[in-house]
Image 1 (cartoon, rainbow, N blue to C red):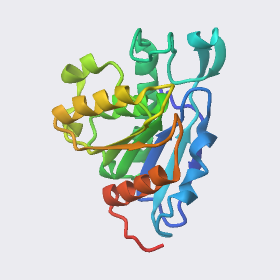
Image 2 (spheres, helix red, strand yellow):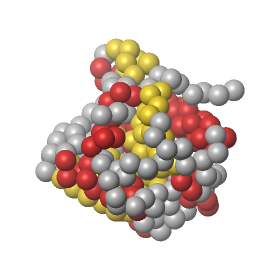
Image 3 (cartoon, rainbow, N blue to C red):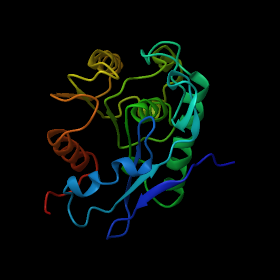
Length: 227
């Protein structure tokens, strides 16, 4: 049975031949990164279907049990401690179902990028590194690698060398940059092509980062530079 949640889907002007599945952070929804697509200034004929799923609504412990959209529960300020393994795995299943759907729609897995911000980036890393299909790349923004001790036995050979773009704010008070840096080191030591970037910002995004994302997407999906 499909575990897909609802999503915002932006179809390209041309026939879709690639997909970017982009997960939002805690308390947001699929609309959060929708406005970034035109800011990427991709070629008019880019052929990318952008998919922005909504996370399930769940109680979040650190927020007093308040119900909000989240990919997994957060117990304390340090997200790398007392991780919600069940929630992480459930949401990885949701993301994997979106990947399956795109492949079923005719998109080659080598033209699927999985992306996410904060919690969404954690799920993107967790799910894509275990996915059996060879993906085009993973983009983790202001995030970290969850349950790192399980990757050695669970990582997929299909994505053993998948290129990864990781970006983080140097002044992030929510997920300190050190968490992202440690994750990038772990992934690099496992042989992944990790492109690591830091920016003078908090837990957010900036124009320089958006430009770097656009360059990386063009490279991964082999887009020309014409606007």
